[in-house]
Image (cartoon, rainbow, N blue to C red; front, top):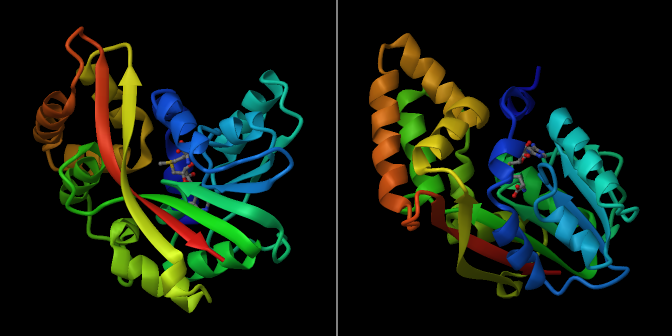
Length: 269
Ligand SMILES: C[S@@+](CC[C@H](N)C(=O)[O-])C[C@H]1O[C@@H](n2cnc3c(N)ncnc32)[C@H](O)[C@@H]1O
């Protein structure tokens, strides 16, 4: 089994995605999506950004490597009555079966960054976008002090070392690396722009519950806990993450509201 696919099918990302809807919608509102526009949402999960894109009237294809998330996305599209939105399985590193220049806009929010072979990922996103179209990525930033960058950093310290040649997904949060990948894919450096934005995770329950959701349903954190348990360090990992979640929470009413900084990348083609 492809380890990238196994990682994301292992848990149930819909449990985290439920806390991301508001920011997902706000992000889509600033992308200039309009009726009839052809949009691919890559690494779409269960459609946090794909549903708002479709509600704006775009013709949306959600592509994700995880079979369970594609099913969840199609179910959400059906329930919302969105005939202009469908989800299918696919790999951002190799979008075989998808014709060149098929989309006006390719969006990937915390999605394609997790695919292996980042140069292939950039090349595939550019290939399926038409001339004059855009690629928009949201990527977590290495070393950033906010939630997700820190979860991934702490989790990796408890996980076995990655295989030889593994390129960290977090390198998609380094502007120089992003430029190098898209220029290699044929984009002009002057057409690549960056802005730092905030995404807020909101849950009606306290941060300790939100942390448990990560522990039991978010592939990278599940793997870290499995490795930590094998070494008798699970409590230590939970404690470290608990300090992080509590410190980042801005809600004062017993709920969770955690803002996290990310890099919004726009490539004009
Ligand atoms: C952190 S989740 C984000 C999901 C969604 N974009 C959102 O904002 O809710 C990462 C997503 O990327 C998907 N993914 C990981 N590797 C992928 C790949 N190689 N090709 C396509 N999707 C991938 C995962 O299955 C998962 O749905």
